Image (cartoon, rainbow, N blue to C red; front, side, top):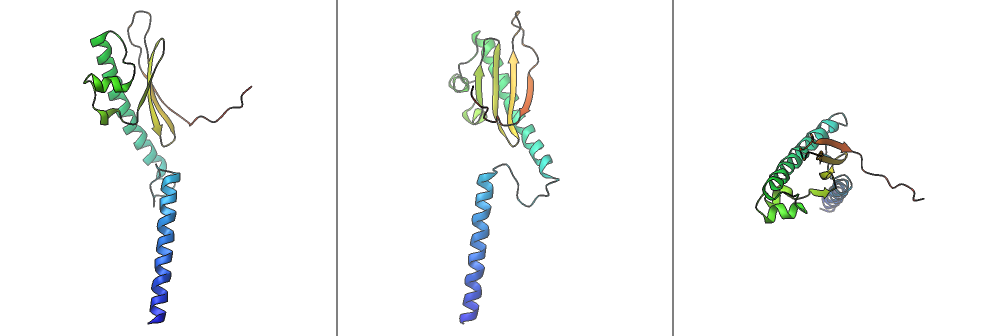
Length: 143
């Protein structure tokens, strides 16, 4: 009847609103896991950062292999893929920046950037990589 149909429509509207809110929350915070206590979320974030760091370390070792083979750093992670040192999926979402003294590989994590930096001393011997998780940079006023 009419009353049952009205209750059913109300339930459908509420369910739709909950679903839309869930999609919004996921877009606003893609690394959050729904239904977890705020006390557990840091553990989930830490686990995700560890997995991201493992991916970065694997890419970093492939960059070192490229450097041994060619005597130079690759210009980008795409060059690693092109030369067969890495698969496209293994470097997806990672970026590499070269500097005069070495390179860094980074990606966005749940609490900011996850990054490994590798610098080379004067002898060309690599220093230990520095792994870090830095908060997302906040815009600073230009002077």
